[in-house]
Length: 398
Image 1 (tube, rainbow, N blue to C red):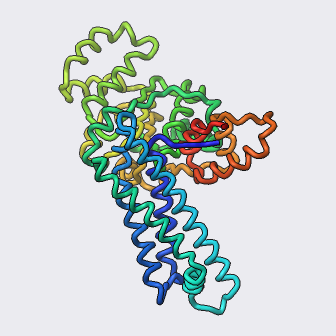
Image 2 (image 1 turned 180 degrees about the vertical axis):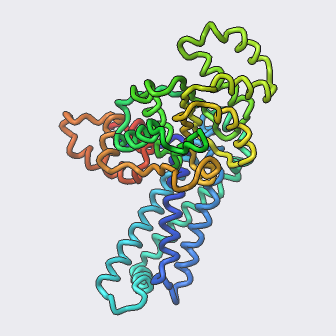
Image 3 (image 1 turned 90 degrees about the horizontal axis):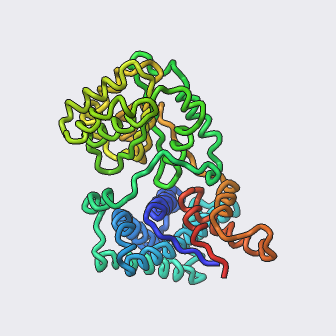
């Protein structure tokens, strides 16, 4: 069985996870490393390499389909990240073992690093760091750009999300779905402001859009609201285009097609924000609506406050459901204690998803062996649905 990943979204989250693990080791009070400056320097080099590759992953995701060298770079980076992750897991495990074995010592990390050096395990750290450094250096040769420089190209290339969903492909989100539906059906939220914004917050690939799709299509939600609209905002929010998209979605609702045909055709030709916002206000006034703003990146409070004005004329119980990776973005719309923070999937849900998308059959004579290999792959995904699905799709039995 072999699995190779195509895409930067999973790797971006993986880099973040490895960085977090490394930071916790370096910041551990017991991790003194006195007398082992070389080991500390190696781990700091590892940290620098991780920070170097993170900003260019979106650009690599875009270019891999037209440049085989970039695709190979992503695969090599994935392999290097696996090795770094294994190394940090081993360091953490050995340190914990040392702590339990000798609680009287003030620096179990120091003792463990000493033993690593004595056993030549320091060579493993050196090789791991050297591999990742080599991958990081190649980003310059490939002319991979940091996120801000590549942003315009990426957003124009990415396929926008839609409200459509295949529920049989989703695992482990039943409780989250019911929690969000409960919030959407609650008419007592934010009565004073006449508008409730519910932000779903989480890292890339964790399933925010999928959860929003699930609740958007739920029968109870469909029956609750007079009108619904879905818009993928992404990294370059244009209030004019977003407003146009919402108006178009409302006009396409059953019963509105003929009524607004002429007005809709006129609005297609205008970029006048005042005209569009006024029209949107008229459509929402006295209506109970649900609008999904998917994949919001920017936290410009002034822009969003102007954009949201028409929504305050809707009827009580109207909701905006927003998905974002950024807590700061969510805080522009509502207080942090009202953010719905999406958690990683449980390991068994990950395994079910992996089986769904891989070529592994539970009826295969090789299933017992394949399950062991597959579960190791799933464990590496750290509960991230996008990683599980992607690696599952690219797992072939050979």
